[in-house]
Length: 617
Ligand code: GCV
Image (tube, rainbow, N blue to C red; front, side):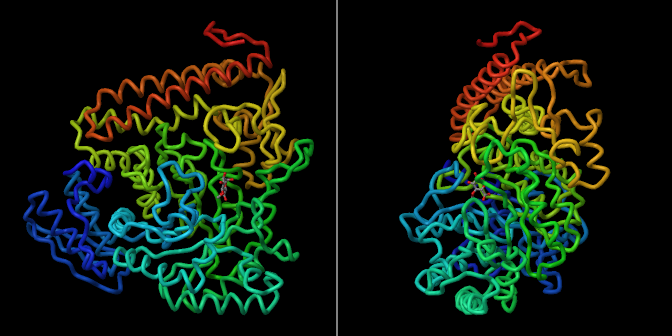
C-alpha cells in the first residue's frame, strides 16, 4: 500500500481504483470483489445473483466455502462492500435480507463555486475552483466508492447558500458538466442533488419569485425539464429559503408549503425530491427582546403546516433546535409532523465541534438523538459533509469515522456506535488488539471530553463568533443571532420552561415533564432548559459553579490523557504525524477553553474553586 492510498481510510483493503469503464453497480461490485479477494488472498467463490425486485436490498447466503450475493442493482454493490468489510475485519457478514431503513441517505456538501467550502475544514472544494467545475475524476470515483461502501446514495455538491455563479448548475452552460459528474457517480448508485436559489427566476427576466404566480411555477417546470434532460436520475433540489438572508416565499406573504409544493410539482414528473430545510429563525434579533426564543422558531413556522406538503417534499430538520451545538435536545419539530416526510440533518463538518482539529466521533451523539426520536418518524437522513481536497479527504484522519458511521447509521440506525467505530478502526488501521481497544475507547469518549472542556451542562454559544473555534463567553451575548446565556453575577442560562419562554411546551407531555422538572432534566441539558443560580446544588451534591469548574478541569485532563494514548498507537504514516500535530492543537484549545471559561465565571460569581486549582483572575 502506498501512503497516498491511505487517503481512502477505511477502504485501504481495496488496492486499486475501480476501472473507469465500470458502468453499472454490478460491474463495480464484480471488480471490487475480485480485487479484494485477490489482495486478501482469499479464494472463496462469490456468486452474484442480480434480482431487480430487490433494488437497494441484498442478501448474502453461505454456500459451501463461498457466498451467494443476491440483490438489486445497487443492492449487489452494497452487499459486495459489506462482504469485503466482513472478510477484512474477521466479522460475520449480515445474514438475511438487508434493506436500508431510509431510502434517501444524503451527503450535503457546502461547497462554493469559487472553491471554498462553508464550514469546511479539510481543504478546498473537491468539485469547484475559481467559479467553475474543477475536479479530479480519479478522486471523484474514490469518493463515489467511499459513499457507496457505506450506503450513501445522494450527494448534493453545492452549498445551500447558493452564491454566484453556483446557480448556473441548473443553467444550460453548466449542465453538460453536471451530467459528466453524474456519470462518474452513477455506477456507484450515488445520485447527484443540487442546491438551488429560490429566487432564480428573478435572474432570468421574471419580476417575481412568488410561488403562487403561475409564471413562476411554469418557469420552474421548464427548468426542471431542461435539467432532467441532462441528468435523468437527478435526486432533486435542496433549498434553504427565508433563512439567514436567503430569499424565500415569505417575501410574497406565502407559506413554506406554498414554496416547497410549487418546486416539488416541477420535479414530480421526473421522480425528483424537493428537500426543504427548516433552519428558519430571526437572525436579526435584538438582544433586548426577551419574547423571542430562537430554538422555538422552526416549530412555530412548520408544525402548523403538517400535512400540507406534497408527497415528494422532504423537510430537512437539524437534529437540535439551535444549530449543531455540542449538545442540544432533539428538535421538537422532528416530533411534531406526523403527516410530513422529514429528513434528520446532522453535521459531520465539525463547525462547533472542533474543526476537525479536535477529535470528535459522532456516533454516540446520533444514538442519543434516536433515544428521543422514534426512527419511523423520519424518512431520510442527511449529513453536512466533512470532505475537502486534503489528501485524506477529512483533514483529521479520524474525522473519516464520522462519514463512515453516518452512512451505516442512515442504512440502519439501530447499529451500535461502538461497533461502527471498531469496524472503522479495524478497516483503517490493522492495529494490535490492545491498541485497537485503546483507539476505540478514545474515539467513543471523544465527544464527552470535548463537551466537558467546551460547553458542559447545556451551555451553548460561548464560542468565538464567525469562526466557531475557541472560547468567547460573551461573543454572542449582544449579537443579532438569538443565542444568549445571560450569565450574571448570580446565575446563568435561559428558563425555557412553561414559566419561562415556554419552549418545553413544544414537546409532548413526557419530554416536556422530563425537561421541566429539575430533578429529571439531565445534567447535560440543565442550562439549556433552566436558569440556575451558581449555588444551585446538583444531584451529586456539587454546586453549579463547582460543576462548571470541575468539568472544564476534567475535560482538559481527559484531553491530555487522550494525547498520551495517541502516542502509544502504531498508526501508519502520515496519519500518525497528522494526528499528533492536531492533538497538540487540541490540547492548546482545551486549555484555552478551560481557563477562559473558568475565569469568566469566577470573575462574575466571585466563587473560588473548592479544590483550589488555578483559576486566573
Ligand atoms: C450554510 C449555520 C452555519 C452556516 C450555515 C447554516 C445553515 O448558521 O454557521 O454557515 O450555512 O448554519 O445550516 O444553513
